[in-house]
Length: 100
Image (cartoon, rainbow, N blue to C red; front, side, top):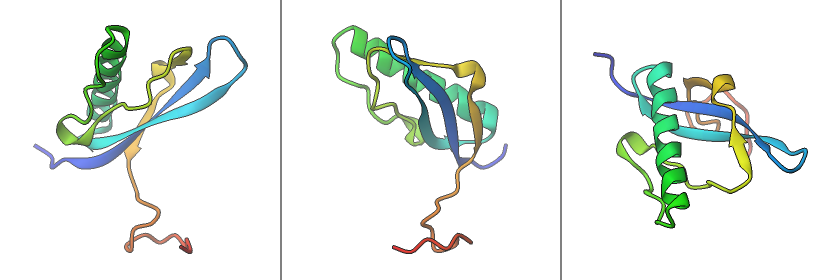
């Protein structure tokens, strides 16, 4: 079995009552892009269910996955979601030239 790596899942979002669009980003450990997508969807569904029930957000789950910014009026387009390996642009091993 492959060793877990950090993945990023980018899910397009839109506001249902306005012309606002954006991207909801999830990160956590997975062994493949498909597993990352499934984990992101699971934690979002859990956070949404808790919100609708008036309960506290479940917070981070195994592998660091979590959904803390669940807001009413926004819909996620899971069919257009993209998952890939996450690269920290501020990492000392990064080839980027960010200045802090």
